[in-house]
Length: 213
Image (cartoon, rainbow, N blue to C red):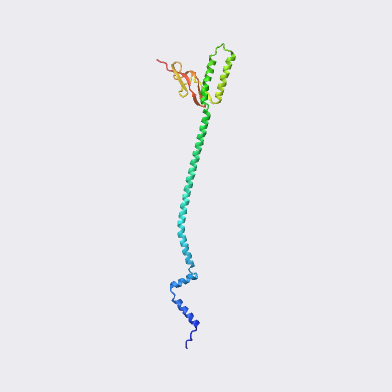
């Protein structure tokens, strides 16, 4: 049976089939790429690149977070130290203010004490011929002075018969006396005074000492 002659259409189809068979793998891959068959491969490669690039960023972020935590801890410690220092400064200021308030009158009290001494001596030395009114007037004046001093925290020191205390007493002389214990205040020549517990003037005293053989 004789082969039928090919039509132009048959010749075109045959040529395309031959060309497809002759294509190289590279050409076939290019065609698949154009047709979208390699889209999944591209996406996989993109994920791999993204993953490899995310790790350094995560490490950097973790380091930054740790640095911020450290800075926050240091700032908190600094804040606590500053608060404690401020509290100490405030406490010292309050103590200084209280101290200044308590002892602001010290100079005035020292100036006033000789007046009190004079009134006491005047009252002691008054003769019996002095009028009752005169005596009462001096006594009232002295009492008013002492009341004012007491109001502002002034206390007198009258250590007669007490052991000698060098912190608040000043010995004028020492006298042998077998009737009392050594270092006993035998006589108060001048009273001492405290201002809010602090010595303003020591008491001037005569102190006993052990009698010789």
